[in-house]
Each structure stands twice: as C-alpha cells, then as structure tokens.
Length: 353
Image (cartoon, rainbow, N blue to C red):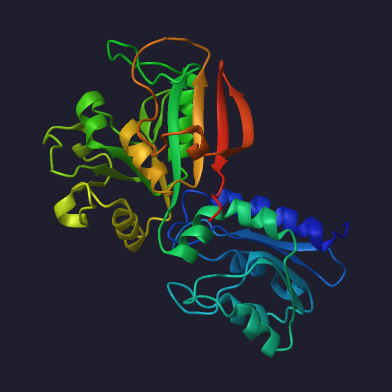
C-alpha cells in the first residue's frame, strides 16, 4: 500500500464529510481518515445520519488494532460529550491513536473540548490543516452554531432581465427541467424550505424535495415553513398535504416586527431551536427583500434563464436600497451552466460600519 500525507488524508476526509450533507442535521457533517504508523490508510468514515456512529467511530472500526500509534485526520474537532453516542475523544484515546489532525475546532460548547482531552491523554493534536476548505463544506452548521440562527440561502429563478413571471402572472416554467432538478437536489441538503404566504396563495407550491423524473418524494423532506403574518394559508393548500412537516409561522406565534409582520430574526431563532441549521428561502420577492434588507441572507443561488420578458414581476422587491450607494454588493463564487440556464452562486459582502 502507498502512504499518503496528512494533507492528502484531510482532502479525502473533506470529500467523505460531504456525503452526509442533508442527512446529519442538527449534527454537523464530519469525515475521518485513519493512517497507520507508516502513513497508510487503514480506516475511513463519515457521519451519515443524526444518531448514527460518528466519523471517527466508523474509521476506528475499520482500522481495528492498526489504529494504535496511528494518525486520525478529521474535519471537525472530535466530540467530548455523551449524547446519542459516546465521546469520540475517548474512543480515539482508547484505540491508542498517537496523533489527531483537526481541520476546524468545534464551536458547540456542549460538544467541544475533544482537543484538550486528547492532549491531556498524551495525544499530539494539530489544528488548521485545510481549515478553510473544511469550513466551506460545513458552513451551514458552523455558522448556525456560532450565532444561534440558521444559515440562509436565498434561491430564485428569473429571466435574463430579472423577471420571475410574465406580465399576466404566468411563471411555469421560466427555467429548464435541468435547473428544476438541481433545485430539488438543493432542497435535499437543507433542513427547511421557507416561502411567504403570497407565494402560497399565488402558486400553491408543494415545497417538497422530489425526483422530477418520476415524481417520487425524497426519503428525507425538509420542514416546510410558510411566513404568514395573519394566518391566511388556506386549509387545502398543498403545503398542508402531509407529504412533509409544515409550520405556518404567524406573527401571533413568532412575534411581530415594527411593521406588524412576522419578526424575521425571531423566526430564525425559533427555527434554530427546532434543530434547523440551514434554510432555503424560496418564493416571495418581498420576503426575499425583507431578508436581504435585514442582512439575514448568507448565500444567493440564482437560476437565470436565457429568456427576456420585458415586463412582469421581478425576482426581488424592497431590499432596503434607495440609491446606488446602498446597493447590496455580492461576491460571485460559482457560475455553472445547468442545461440552457446559468446557476450563479454569490455571497453578500459584509458592509463596513
């Protein structure tokens, strides 16, 4: 067998961690690679689902006695508490691992402390290898744990001139089937899909994650959230069809902001308490504008169709911008062609002051 470097092992661990996206929440995605004393890979693992064995435990089981005096390369600091599973820090110590390389420290005060426990047991601990890359792969969970509310992705679909529907209100379909399949895959990676009551009344969406080729529902469905300040969601709306859990979030339940509508920071805090770590904001140009105006959007994924309408509703309304100096500046991080459409991924730049 060929030995690998710690850097190569961490790159592999990050790839493994990504396999858990969409199934581990409210826990993080984690990958682990175990190297023996000669630097050969003797175990691999990732956290596959909440309540299941952690990445380190899976890798240790594969390695067996070959883990002794070896190196564990893990994307997140090993947990140091007993929840549905035991502490990974203790498991690594008991296996006789001599070194643990960690990409990102754990910001969760309940589970953190693994590095200190390992060092106290005489294990060498190194931090920061491929830290930025591991952080990017676990950004929703890390962001949510650090600040106490979910990571928010605003998804929209529009024509090249920014229209989300024609002048007569028709909007099916602006983008191609390939783009819509991609959206359903995106839904499968988040914990909640959120839309405004206006979208529910106008379009009656299901807000489920589906396989568009045969119409079947994905095994895991995100929570459907309708922001409905005054409780106008019809009893027969498709978001109430039982295909997935649904929360109609009203101002009476969540709390109202100065405008009398659902208080958005309070809504996000309530979702965090429900175990939601990543939210996909869909449907409602005014709701999207309110989230952007409040600085609550972390990432934007736009599907842009090679079409022009010249009139009709726009994808975004009232984002708190009245002059060019107030424009919300973005950083493009990816542009990919999906069928005939473009998927543009951007991050809002933090404003100074």
